[in-house]
Structures are given as C-alpha cells and as structure tokens.
Length: 199
Image (cartoon, rainbow, N blue to C red; front, side, top):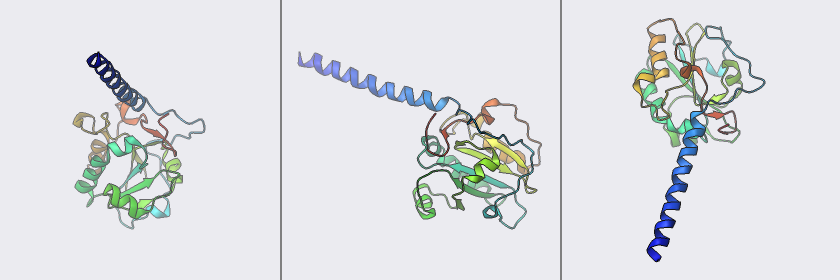
C-alpha cells in the first residue's frame, strides 16, 4: 500500500512540474501584446538620440533592452555578452535597463557580466518603438533605425538559423539594406514593459 501511495504521489509531483514547465513555455512563446498607446517607429526612420547615447564616434549603436527580472532577458544573457565581445570594436553597445525596481549600474554589471554603459531611461524604449524585453535595437552611424526585434527564435538563442540580431548586426556592419522577411524577427516576445509581466 505504501508503494502505491508513493507512486501516486511521485506521479502527481511529476505532472505538476511538467505542467509548470509547459505553461512557462507556452506563456513565453506567445507574442507580447501590443500596448493600446503604442506608437510604431518605422525601420529607416531617423532618430534623435538621447544625450546619454552620445559616444562621440562614428560607430553604429546596438541597444539591448533588458529587464533583470524578466526570464526571457535572463535566458539570452550569454548571447548578448557574446555579441558584445565579438563586435565591441566596431559597434557602441549600451544596455537600456527597463524596470520599475531600483538597480545600480554596479549591481547589473556584477550580476550579469555586462561591461558596457547601463542606462536607466524608459523613454528610450518609446523613442525606438520597443514595448518588450529582451529586444535588440540597432541604429546606424547616421542615426537611422536599422533593426528592432528579437535575438533568436529559440529562447536560449541557440538556433543559428534564426539568430536574428546577430544576422542584422553583421548586415549593418556590411552596409546591407535591411529586409524584414521573417515575421518572428520583428514580432515582440518576452516581458511587457516595464513590470516584467509575461502578458
């Protein structure tokens, strides 16, 4: 009898755990709802950059919109660090911190290993048409929006075929015109701004 009770208990526990992971997968595989007051910013549009984003050089700019409390933001942290490491000589990188909680630059750098400027200014998201984290935004050296979208189809950024941000970054550096052929690249997935809600 004890064996049956233990087996039933173990089965129920396994079902609950699997159900939790299934629900989590479902929630974060659905697009982030577009806010009612959303103002789209067209690719190619010239942007007036925030003074905090003035690097005083002629390099393009890569903005990583990041919420430390968003699971999707944490899933791709290794990927963004890899992009920074491989392209930091050609591109200015900055992390745009999107949260209502208070984090210091030192805390973010230490916890996530991000050795680039950390900027807490939610207005930059509106300026770039961002309403979800994580999102990548690339701005050309002449201040035109080149790319706004996802990092990858896979939440851990391991699918090389759909490494959207990396492909866009390399296209921008090679002066290729940007075509948005894959809808998954430009549809927002992840956590709604700024409170890390999945939906």
